[in-house]
Image (tube, rainbow, N blue to C red):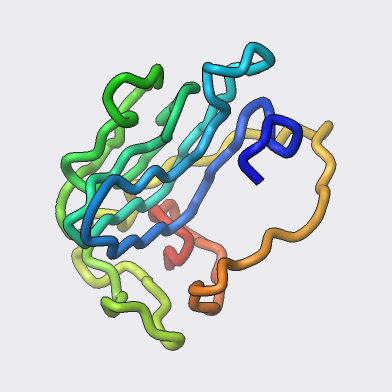
Length: 170
């Protein structure tokens, strides 16, 4: 954890996710790419498509902590006031979220509960705001299942059948 040897390199394709954070202070960094203080840094990229990234508390939202490239493609809804990263760090951003605001109007409860599903509510701006996905590179191997953090709330994951943003589109 937090070492160059264990870090993922290359491009992280972050597609059709719903991220909800209710942190109240400090800065929340969504991604932690390699530090530019390491001469072996490969220059990592995160590509975001069809996501909802919602910060509801008072904390500041940064896309990444240290260095790297954040590439917005397709539709993305991100809380207003987001930054590329903390000041003084080298984060390159290409594109921009297609939607920003303070509330994407999801059927989520805050704080989270085990029964919540975060589907878009009627009239939500994320309905129909997504774009098609690109072909998945076939050369990737799957090293193992991701683990939920201890405080995570498990829920039902439903694949979107429409071009809605987020993980729970209808």
